[in-house]
Image (cartoon, rainbow, N blue to C red; front, side, top):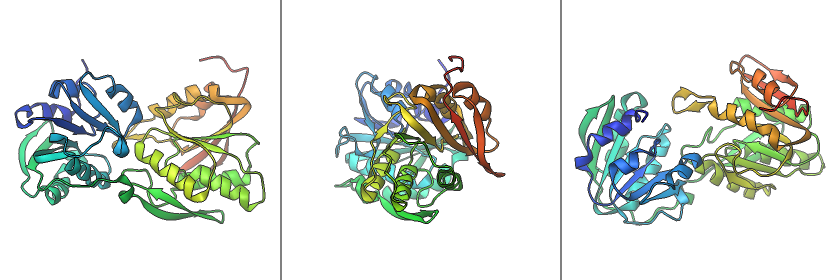
Length: 354
């Protein structure tokens, strides 16, 4: 069996501090749960992990912060793993307080290099009596009793709104803790949107892969409206719960057309599209990780109509050009600078399979 992440190993060293009904927020390896307890609740905002977690005997799995499996006062020990975004830690601790039964304990686990020492201040705001119970595997483990448990947890109360503008199109975008580029238009997405104005897309349905808060689909439709053009429906797909929630909210406020779904890659995407757009992620935690995008590039041609286009923006140093050519078809750089490149490829029937 592959080694567990350091934070998971550190928690397993402290099983004696866990009691009663257990809830675990934010683990990254499903083999942890059976080692902790025969049953419990596990929460993840990653759709692929959630799919795996639904197979664990005895454990209920919740996808994100609005899942029906979540209920108040159902846990005696709530384990909170440190998320990569500090703002999301406050969200996890709020959920932990709502899940907590009277007298419940919260356990915070995180690696030192990920900033667990600084996160302790947030823990003590929820549980002032927090104490460090162990340092192991380059991690710290803290625990305290939650006083008092929260009566309400509503993810909509955490949602914020921020204006973004590109090429004269201005609209509001929903945000939640932990979502990429919350509250601003990142430079890569701006370059992709500008390319849509400079080199318009062919007619037909559009898919936004790794859609985040729904910026690309919303902007494209508002831009088309501003020119008096027919509006293109843009479906969106993302692996993260907060992104799906925010994209749906952004679309609703802008009266944008399209279906937003959660999926790990393209597994839950059934249709074919004239265009697939994307500003895909390339980080897992603090590490560079292009595996998700590489798998997407292997699959995307199967979701393009004949002659359909993939248009993708990525950091210029990432090695996507050959992958795009191999799996989609002829590729060109529409625009590029020292930071980003917008790639365009047309589905090629003559390309070899696989």
